[in-house]
Figure: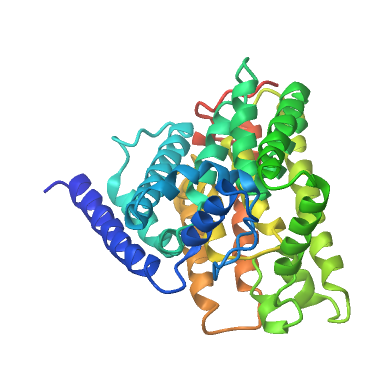
Length: 393
């Protein structure tokens, strides 16, 4: 058996095991996240409130997700679970394939032992997402395809991809800053219009009081975003920059102020780094810009969950596979970052009270920012100057 087949077999067997465990978890009395999605989809289809179901896991998404999942409610529950698992796995594979393509690596020619090691390092995130029945891999693929299409003349295509991602899970709305930083104002306008329509139209199936409904939804999200904030240990476990600020700043500071400040600093620094790199080299096309924004999504999020780390996969792939032309150990700096990133998340179990998760994300953020700087300076030397998704300058 070749190394490629052996590596592929290990990954496939691992995913099959996750599928078996996912089906088992789905049939627990409390179900899992997909159970909540389907209950809300059924409620939407019958004209009742999707945010007031019997689900143990609270539905915290815009109603667009419930709307597109209505067809799954007509399938047997087990079939829906398997189909959803397959969609997540397919989205993961396509996302990895596309990101590797950005750095000039075809999936059929990749060094599969390298890919297997990367897979095993991040498998704790994959397992958490799949066994929770989460939607993150589908959102990831939409975000990846949005960036891949960012330079299309037909701007409605990336606008639709962005809108679908933001309407499923609000957090990707920050990606609108990518075309805004490139002055693609038509794409920005279409993206905001399409995403608003996707969020608002399903509400009309439930009530005509759209404003009141959205206000109640915002209050629900705010309630869950503030959960655990009064607990010092819980705050330190937050993945966001706000968790670090809360660990440093006085405990008497209102949690809402810290969360807003953390998100604002993350967004401003990310936009500044992106625009600075384009100022140095307006023609450069770097996947690192996208990776930086995706890590920033997790750092800016008011809610911290392990499965959110799926959104960092583009940055983790770039750190692992895109090595600079330097000699010696510096060629492997990105891989060291991925290994340490993984280790810090396991450290959380034994050393509570310190923001290990946020530290890991900040380290990955810094590595991605460094890659963005390399890509903006062609003379520095890196495979990061390989073909990139077309971005209009």
